[in-house]
Length: 287
Ligand SMILES: Nc1nc2c(ncn2[C@@H]2O[C@H](COP(=O)(O)OP(=O)(O)OP(=O)(O)O)[C@@H](O)[C@H]2O)c(=O)[nH]1
Ligand SMILES: [Mg+2]
Image (tube, helix red, strand yellow):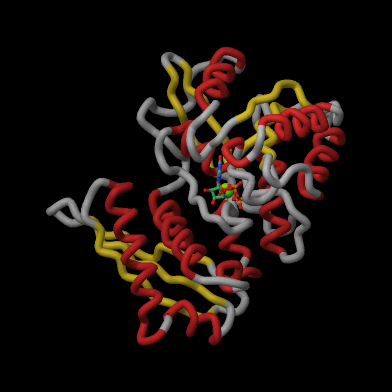
């Protein structure tokens, strides 16, 4: 768990050793719970990436924050990530409160240590330790990889033992269609600004595999207004072309095959109030 943009998804991808969750410099990138499955020797560790905790305003926001808390409740251990550069903010305070309320302790992961001096880190660790909800402290740079192996080693040693829950080569629980939609949504987050990324959802509408090993993926980017559609399309379709090219390259690498990607942009002003989408994402419509 952590405030938006703390680096949760970056860490999960590192721990898993593959991209299972999209990452951008913008807040509220992750919208659903995503499992990242990692092997270390004989141990299989299942990480749950969660949306950031923030003050929800819209139905989707409430469902995201609810998914984060449910993700935490499901875990044998909770990792609370704090962006060391940002320090303790209202979102982190909200998490501490929630941990107290649910009587759970968390492993503190101070992230982005590449951006902060050591004295400041120690002071922050001490301050967070005062909250009484911290059971252990790690300092990492999820981006650079520093300290990540310590986290992995410690968890592999201390998690409760049980049978593996997934096949050894599985890295995520996301269906391919959803994963593919996430990859395109990542590009929308990177290439559009202000409210636009927060007004967008992406659906994989069709998935067709060919004998030559390639796959044709049809997707729709849904926006809420005509003006947003114009922005996503760009002049003469230049922006959606850029989004598609970047997503296609990434998908090709991810699925290790040639991908033919076709993207449409449509206005659906009420997509955020469409109950069926929430269930497909594992989100609670009424959260
Ligand atoms: N300098 C630095 N940047 C980092 C580090 N870890 C993550 N970042 C950057 O922080 C930004 C947010 O990373 P994410 O992994 O998307 O953060 P998140 O916590 O999953 O964010 P939400 O999904 O929005 O809650 C990205 O630009 C990352 O590259 C780090 O250790 N050092
Ligand atoms: Mg994330």
